[in-house]
Length: 145
Length: 145
DNA sequence: CTCCTTACTGATAAATATTTTCAATAAGGA
DNA sequence: TCCTTATTGAAAATATTTATCAGTAAGGAG
Image (cartoon, rainbow over all chains, first blue to last red; front, side):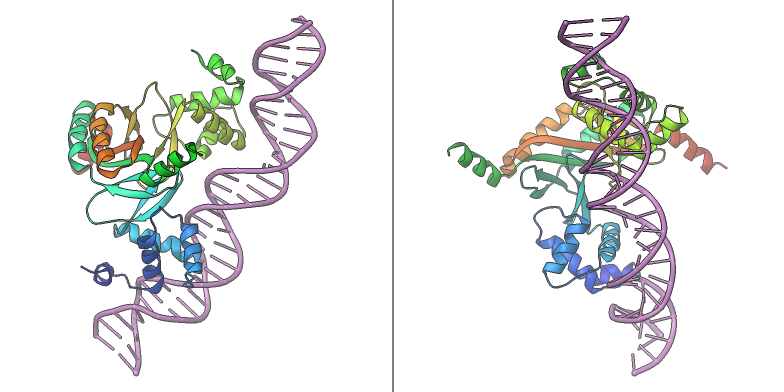
C-alpha cells in the first residue's frame, strides 16, 4: 500500500509538507529534530512551516511511518521507520543510526519479566549505543597522529 | 558509601535541595518531571527553586543516583536509581514504574548485533511497557459494571 | 567554635521548544 | 468543475530549559 492510499484510508490527505518531511527523513542517516527537519526543508528550497513539521510528525507517528529515537541523554529525534518492528543502534560520535531486529531475543526476556512482576507486558523500547565503523577508523587515525 | 561522602568525594556539597529532590524521588512510584518535582517540593512545604531542581537532577544523574525514563511518546521523567544496572517497566495506565534486570538476556543480543553491524556496542537502553497488576484489576472491575 | 573559601541557591531574564488559534488554501470525492 | 473540509502558515500564547549574578551557606582549616 502506497503512502497516498495509506493516508486516504485514514481520512487524511497527501500534501507537499508531508512528502517533504518524509523525503528528508528518508535521506537522513541520523535522527532529526523538528527544528532540523525545518532547517533541511529550507535548505532544500522546500520550506515548510515549523508548526507543520510538528503536526506532520505527529501524523507520521500515528501511521507508524516514522519513529522516535532517544539519545542517551534524553533528547530525541525522528527517523524513518522501515516495515516491521525494529530497534535502533546509534553511534554516540556521529549519531548515525541503523536498525536491527531483536524480536526473538526479547520475547524470552519479556515473558520472564511478565511472570516475575505480574505486569502484562505489551510493549518495549530498546536502543543500543555504540561506535560505528567509520568513527572507529577516525579514532584509530587520530591515535596514530 | 553514603550520600554525603559520595558528594564530597566529587567536590560537591550536601545541601537541602539535593536532599529534598532525592527524597521526593524515593517516595515516588512513578517517574517525575522537573516540573512535578518542583510541585511536590512546594506541597511538602520544602520549596526548591525550579532552576535548582534542574541543576540537582543534572548532578544526581552524574552520580548515577537517578535515571531518566522515556515514555513511549518521548516525554521523560526521573526515577531513583537502585544500585547496579536496571531497566524499567512502566505501566501505561498509571505510569507506575518498577525496575528489572536484563543483563544476561541482552548480552547475547548485543554480541550478535556487534558482529552483524561492525559497530562497537557499548551501551543500551531498554524499557518495557505494560499494565500493572492494580490497573489490571481496575480494568476487570470496569468490565463487570 | 569561628573564619574563609567557594560551591550552591534562588530570582530574574533570556533562549528554546512546543502548542493553540484562525483565516486562507488546496486535496480529492461527487 | 465544484464543494466540503483537512491542512497549511503566520502569529501569539505556553511551556521548557539554560544563563547570569548577587547573596547564602557547606565544610575544611585553624
